[in-house]
Length: 212
Image (cartoon, rainbow, N blue to C red; front, side):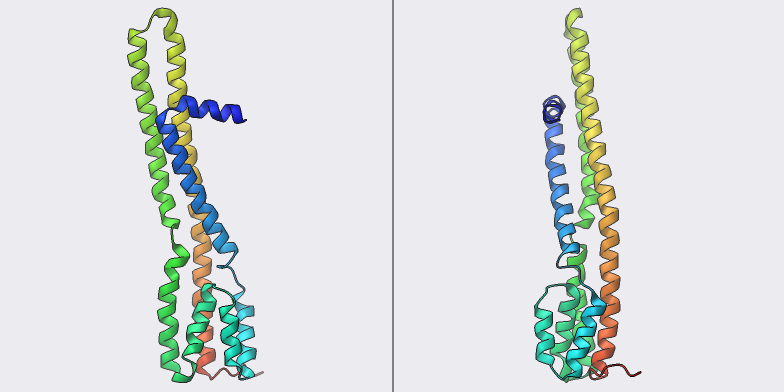
């Protein structure tokens, strides 16, 4: 497998190397966003809000704030902002929550949009590599001896096809990753908005637990 990949890189030419660099950037973005959504960006908001309810019912606001400090998840940062304004009235709480949502939302979506641009870049790099290889084929075959034409034609076509395949593979990877990560970002954003509304109602009621 390693020898096959080495051959592809060798025959692919300079545009293949550019696509490999592009692919490395794509993988870095995918891994970083996956870690975010599965790590600090992932938290059970319902359970988290229930914990805050219990602490507020016990009039333990400082403990609730420490609970928020234990994670950097967006819902925790929103909760901390609301708790900091808890004694300043419902309007102050709502403003703090809204301002924090505006701050944390871009963090959820960061770099995901770049995958779509990288898909286009990879496709164009593959196309450039293909066109360049075809030009090289025509020039080489035109001036080559008859017994050399077959070998040069074979090498040139291989370079062209490798570049096309690499560009399309990277583009498809970007599109699939963009779809998955965008869906994850939408879920986190929706969960954050729902959590913020419930938190605002809770703090607006003075932190009292629900009746019944």
